[in-house]
Image (tube, rainbow, N blue to C red; front, side):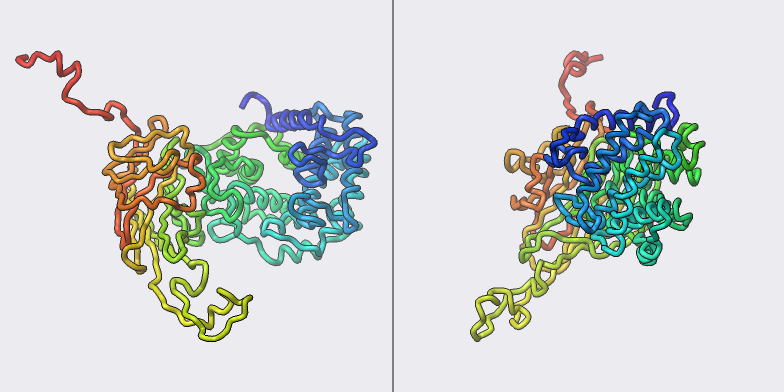
Length: 574
């Protein structure tokens, strides 16, 4: 990571980002978006936190930060003035702004914007830069009017609450003649939505954990409430457990758009950095170090360096990473195993992948189990239990309608058109069929996992599919003597004793395959070409045990023969 201090790394990255964005500020005076940051993706200048607010934050930091190429730059000061005027012109009469592809006159999106811009006003009060007071004056009208629009106006998602708290806390501290304390307390009195394991309610390890933690950290600092750091601390420790050997993180449990993504949570680097240094926690510092190596040094760290100057002067040093452990997270319903480059996870609440397994570069992103039983193919976790060497997960489905599985009998009298066919189901007699459940039982023995899959209830003769999904099909290889692709780019049907999926020399061998039919369509069929799908099929009732063996592949063992040079030229009498 070179010989720079952490402060110098952040400033270098800040300058790079500013340089890449300056040409996209609208500088034509006759245009209505004059001064705004034009987004090529949107096709217009937007005041949102991914548009002009972000730009205004970065150029403001550049102007105020010693060591930046843009420190005290007159052109940058003029650009700050123009961008802040554009920001004000975009406010609705309420003081709020739009995020123009989703929410309008939006309190939480205004809060995201304020939380970005307000630190510039705060740093203006700390900076020795010329015209720093004028930078603060440029920003005040927007920040005050926006905060008034945010207060008492609500939110959508759980993380929005802590963005609102942060935004109001910053403005309340900057401009004491405007009090938002009562509104801040209304949000904080609800309590932070984190469970005993450290999992936030949105369960979003790749995206929204970073949002929650960043805003709680700032609120804790300004309000001088260290108790607000406790959920952050718990969440970051949990995240460090859910990281794999390659620093990607578990996302199958997410309720948000990162569900199922294979990604490194670099957005959380600043939170790991802050808490690692604040607590002198080697575990968190190690994660911060690795995440920062893989991405940019975020400008949010500048605020921490101003509060803790010694952090800026010293380089972050990592500790040792724990490489072997098993976690039973009862409150979150997660069983997690890490052992070197092996990671295995069973989770009660997933995006259709209750068990996943990674060994180095080869990643089985999940096992799905499906049965098209009365329109229900998707089964979700209902109950998980742990034991010393494994876990058991029970899955069920709601079939989409409360009355299913069943057939509906006629009412025997006229039914209004608008009530057909489902308007009066509660009045109809039912011809019922038995409920259907699935149990997945995982037993670990070193680098081998026996996965028993069995059905309970339901009816005999229902087509059943087990699907093993592997990431990056362009980089995986399949070895085995008895598999057959059903269609081009379609699933690999595994009915043999052994099939190996490998990337490089990292391998997962699937033993005890079975194939009783070719009804292989599942909810992930639409992802063919992006995933390698290895499917096994049976008819209910099902009770099968599949063994997954993680290992280094030895190509010397690939083919065995009694012929070849060593045999052909051997003197049989010697």
